[in-house]
Length: 435
Image (cartoon, rainbow, N blue to C red; front, side, top):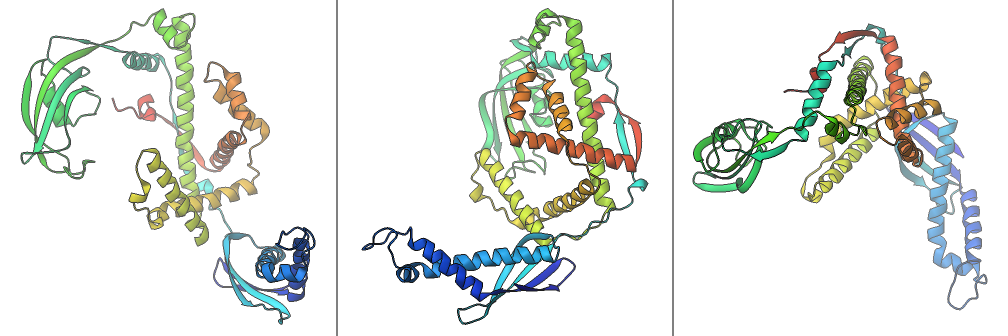
């Protein structure tokens, strides 16, 4: 085998490779001979088919297979000889290759992985939220849990925020009904954000048996494009108003939350532990987002277009599967790869940077680290042993935990280089609570 490397651009390379035709012909002859011993043909006993007959029927196919294998092997050998890291699949172009030629020649055009030079991370600043979980946060969580277990009972009064209302409504635009604008016996809870504010304000104050009519203009950015920005007229008839009855915070309530003996102090301890676990998870997520952004902002890297196209294709397929899982026909939705190009470029770039940092600084996940993360996950369940078994029964699940550890190692290394400032943060702000 002979090869010659040509640099086309910063990442693109072309290898010109020549393979001995004698080696190709020899391998073709060997395969035909082996095939003659197993092939079944009419008029011949098994293993007695003449090689010439086999060659007439299968010679072209066998030659193509041998040439394909020769290309794969010689390309791999040439790449290793040149110490190249190939990104994506090469484009193969045959230059010459017939039985009378002494050599089979082809070119392989491909991209290589770029060199990644990390920027100066010591100049970067990362904020780490610091959140305290106190009695107020526990009390608020208990109230949320009570509301989730509320029982709604009919009342003879006007509807107010927090109530459930059972009603009929009919909407028209220009006197014509429109899709989604009418319903009978619809039950909705006021104050949950499921209704447009202007719609809900006309429901509040109505009692069972009362009706009202009003005009409403849909927002310009309303998800229903056919009615966005248009004015509609609605008629509402209220059948029933129900108010929430919250459970008492007693032993039965504690038992409903998994505290077998109904001990309220133990219930609060469990809630605190769960809140602290969630605070830790969200704090880590915020820091991780800043770390990834810092790596992207501080490091410039050329991107192999082959990897970008592969990632865009993967994102498009992921979107297709997501649409199908929602009951939509993905074939009716245009999903051009160009629509995913920007996100694909960001992911490929980040992946190259992360891979460089992980390999250079030995940040791969260790078995004991993976075990520790699995233990942490198991703690959140009533039967942790089953959770441990569930993870260790599946290599895919363990790989997920391995990724979690790798990310944690990466974040720890980057925050060790950058300036980390602790920022006191309100519990609700970290949790994204808006109420």
